[in-house]
Length: 217
Image (cartoon, rainbow, N blue to C red; front, top):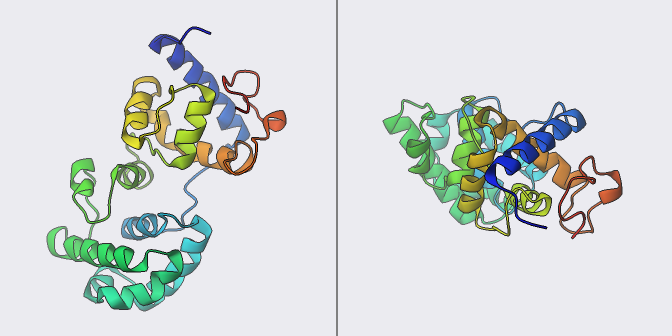
């Protein structure tokens, strides 16, 4: 099968977006938060940890440290004591501590709404910055987590690209900016329920089975 042109991929992407919208109309971020700084904390804790576990652990963290100032005043060791069930406790606690201090001292306790400024915060990479931009500030965003990378390769939206930034750049070319954030959330839902990583994908119940290029490969 000849490779799709960029224009063909754009049309293909629109079809996938519409089908996933019907399948997962209410898909949103699976990390619990009610303030921007809390999403910043949660997304750091979510590295190599399930969102469900993070949601449990942060309840205890926010009980003890209910705002940016309180968390910024805590030592990394105090934070680690609470967040260690998420794994990589030492490095995560160190990043969270440093990040909250910068928010307190530089941004008046607020999370900056600028992608490049977010990237300068400790422990914040492109995936986290895109999540914040899309979910908190409603700006165009593409979150290339493991589900996004796996599914877009299987579907044929990207061609054998595994590096997150390269996948992101490829998707920016074919996904309408206003659709990117919710599209990535729907990929998470679809990746967990149907197009799974640890078992064979459940192609027989997939809403994309007739158009997916890999179809189970």
